[in-house]
Length: 301
Image (cartoon, rainbow, N blue to C red; front, side, top):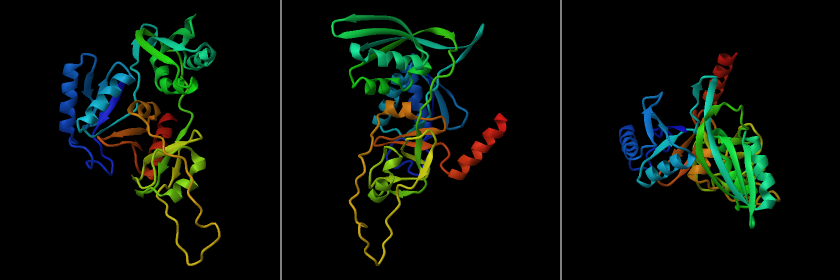
């Protein structure tokens, strides 16, 4: 897998990290590459961005967690699989996947991996566990672990190892939910969250500071939606019935580094600091995102 590492340029950059400059981040990545033979650091498309290549989501996630614990602050893009040109066309990495799961949940696992272009090789039952073996493209394994644990109530054990490069197996289902994007900069209010509960789960709680373009939650539908989590209740001189109802919104979802990487879309970044993990859009302004979308449509057309 390859992933873009870049300096953090968000409105709250530099507040929580000790090492924030491009020189400091690049020097630390070079040291990591010298001590880890499975890690490569290449120049990126932007001056303050680099392409880091590793063995998988877990490998790169450990690198990110190590850097943030050392006091580094940076941003990363969505992981992508490295495709190479073969004799008969594009080839992608294929992995051998083993899943240990209770027999009653084996059907869910087979269906889930089948949708992600996985092919089952063998199924055996020993004792109270079913052992499933698959061949699946590395693209299909991004985001699989979390969904697998949810579908099996945390009882599945998944392991995978690289097998070979093989012919491209076609499209893999993408994320079926969009993002809730903040339209304002300020502190989140319970009043606003209470009014947005029908949109989907939140990643922030009342009192936290957010900025324009930050992803503050997951939308139940596939498209992104603009919300204002910092909206305050307007004061009036008339006390209306029911105007002071108690705010009852669900608690925020706190994602780990690996879960954030699985959630990222192509136009999003993960802001990593020693104290926080924030999801954001690459282009923070809504007008800039619309302009970029029009440009991409013109290029595709």
